[in-house]
Image (cartoon, rainbow, N blue to C red; front, side, top):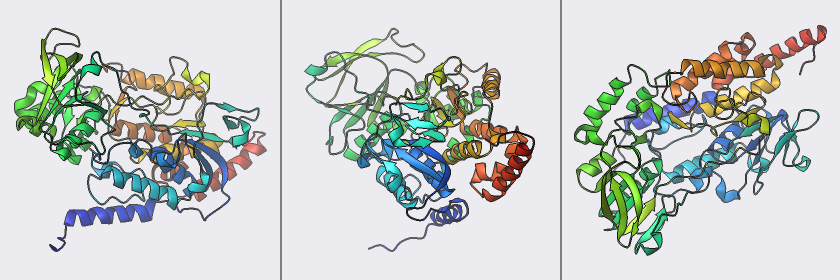
Length: 500
């Protein structure tokens, strides 16, 4: 056996993770501990739900997790994808809890699920999780406490919806599909399938196509052809480049957007520049993060075709191949793309938030047009964490999960920090005004630095929130702000105001 070689960068990464855990991880509660109010209902036991619940109990707040599926669904979408799937962004940008410890830069699905499960166990969430309990209705009683489905589930002070953006697999039916002599699978259902030496056709060019490409490479397929109806930016699997793109604090296309777009075309696409979108800026849509696809196209093991599917043939798919810049259903050349296996990289349905009260869906303040994109203006005690985003450059599994959770806790325990409905709507309108020149809706795309700006603005705009800054941003200490809250309550009570 070859001796283990010392890796300085991995050692430094392990040290960084150890420091984060020791400094920022809240202390898990003792087994069967009775925790304090406010009591939070977390809907969903995926990555976001488990991370948010661990923050709640770690800071001494009671929580119950409601999960529609069984224990096998712990981990959300990661519990259902292929074993060949893994992170496309560096794990440095996927730190959904300070105690998470990655063993490599780009962990696979099994390691991600193991970290979620370990977190769930470490914070004693097993006794606080109700599996096979689908939430169909959420409403407030006469005392403004939240009821989940019916009073038998208990009453809660806050709601943290963590149902994510990926539900059931989309499996569209395409004309002539029955006559195809090969195999047809969804991109999330590839475990155990064999594709060595086969020609694979991938329908769809989004994030699910990456999953199909990983499978094809793992199985040593003869060739993979991606059929994409719309153009999508592809960016390198590089944490520095991904981080720089996320630094656009304006969260929209600007006069300077041509700089990163030109650099990507010249240095990354190079001879394949015609595959880059010609009519869509990089700050309008979620890019595909993959460093291999362009190299696979260059060496002939993959092909990327832009156009429209017309139907199946016995040996492949009839396809209208369009040139760069030609819109969907525009003129092109019809060809038959031949293959032995078709992978539907058609994504997933978005889980519905319809269990929330009707008033949170009224225009023009329907999701994603909410306060900080997650708090409906009518109910500051509801936080829909990672449920409402549409497109972004950043990550769904990072520090913001804890920040959103602690903002909700702050609002619940400190009356003077609570945002009024009128001011929440004013912030939404202000953000729309700031992004009025964006080719997409103000909340239809954002960058991670813009998200951080939202958090900073939220805390800075209200002096009563300043004492909570360390808690909100880093999860450090509740004793000092809570002692100040008690003093404020005494003053308010002396002036004839109620403390909550």
